Length: 558
Image 1: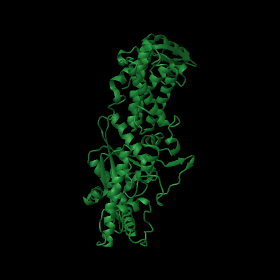
Image 2: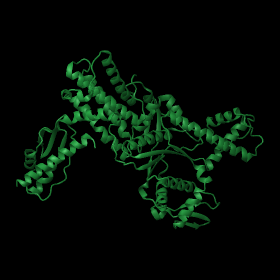
Image 3: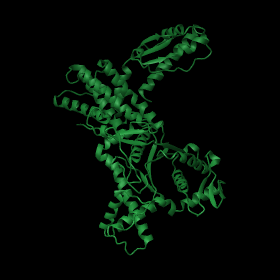
Image 4: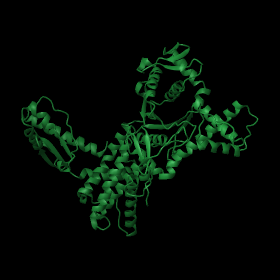
């Protein structure tokens, strides 16, 4: 539990104790004491916390809210903790808390270091996040890139709050799209020696297919002795392996590494599809109709039943998906989190139905839907068409704006919000670029501490610093922002809102830059300089912490 939460609970207990005393002294006649709600006022002049408990008690006590509020204030104890109390308006109570708790926050940051804000909320629960899982028939696009940034950051956040979170990439290396890819690659390979060879009408026209064909030729593989079917199958399997290797390399450059890459083909080769069908059949959730085999998913709230085996005796893609999720659950994961693209809303009902039909709780599967990304350059939307082979890849994006800017821009909006990605802004080296602004705050602190060392200025531990001199408004604001991080990490993880950490980082950088503008550090003498150096050291640690959660570098120089 963070210090900020402890202070809130401590104040709530003091308020409750005061009400109990008033009741015992027969100055207040009420049957029950309501739950004590404390809010953080928008206006700083209204204190650190505010409570409406007097308004709640007024009617049953048959007194005015102000009378009740004044009684509560009179009976409050622990004046060292509560610095000042005001009764405002019709009876709100505003509490001003001693700064000691903020100094305790700095002590905690120094003690916990880069683990500041961690908790054991998840108690080691086994969670598996599957994200990106782009078809291995082309490079990753910007929607895949957004999924990579969000999924990886969410995994980091879940680990920070005590979950045993693993990550997985599902390679769809079976199905119609891979056959089309194989025919496309075979055609481009043939065109290297026969320019008139026809390209499939439904083929993948991207330049990357031609580049793969050239690489296949350089490797000296002779396909001429193979039958047409053998050629296509060779191109399919070889090309997919090449694309998966390319995708993996691009993700590593994006600072995203998966614990496991799972191949769909393994489900087919090990009989996993047949096994899950047998399990669902034995449970009574399969039936035959019109020559096809159906899964009775409506028994669990899906909008319609789903075909598992078509009339031509081939499997639908739903079948492999069910087998894959069954495999995940059998591996011991108690919560599965899937991050899917914006056109997958219909996927949720059928997969939740499958999970329940297999004997697991409905909430064992959680599906998060990512919204679209639009790329803007100089205020104009960048036109993209995957079918035409015209799109900006993850590698293009990293080359143009850098890994850190790309990750931050994908993370700065909630995952269920449409994102306009401003390429021009992301490439700027200025304070208008939010990631530059945040990183510059960290680099500026590193520069201050380096100058202190060069000038032989003593930088002491927080526990040895005279923290009581930190009482200017901007210093208080900075310490309060540092105190918020544990709750922000918990909320970001539990509500699946990694954008909260991106916003927190920007807010913290803004308060620090304001502090730097209004407060001398090395230009001061004695206790003020010592205390401010301790404070900025804590800010540096917290910036490192949040940037690490976001997968962004905390530079020492810029």
